Image 1 (spheres, rainbow, N blue to C red):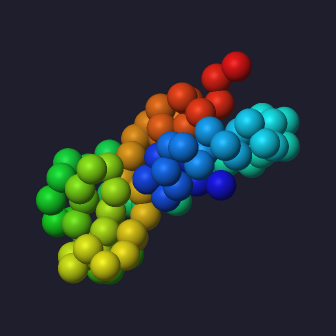
Image 2 (cartoon, rainbow, N blue to C red):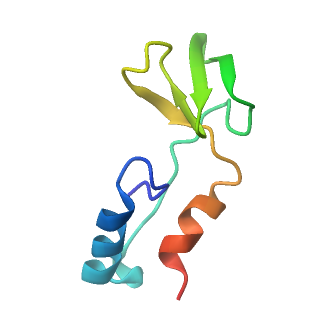
Image 3 (tube, rainbow, N blue to C red):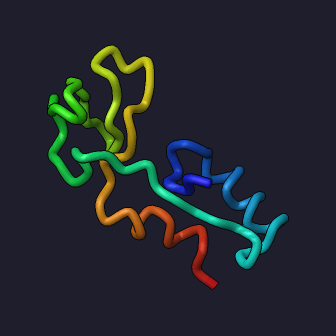
Length: 82
C-alpha cells in the first residue's frame, strides 16, 4: 500500500496496521521525477504536472500523477514505528 497519508486517509492506515500487523504489510511509493521539487508546474515524463502539497497532479487536478514527497520514508514513518 502507499502509506503517504494522501492515497489513503490516516484513519484507514491505522486500521490496516492494526488489522494486518507490521509483519504482513508491504509499503511502496509512487514517487515521480519531480519528487522534491518546489510547488508549481514542472515536466515529468513529457507531461506538465502541478506539484502541490507534496503530490504531483495533472494540471486540472483531476488525477494524481505521483508523489512529490522526499524523503518518502518520512511519510511512511509515523504509521510503521513500533
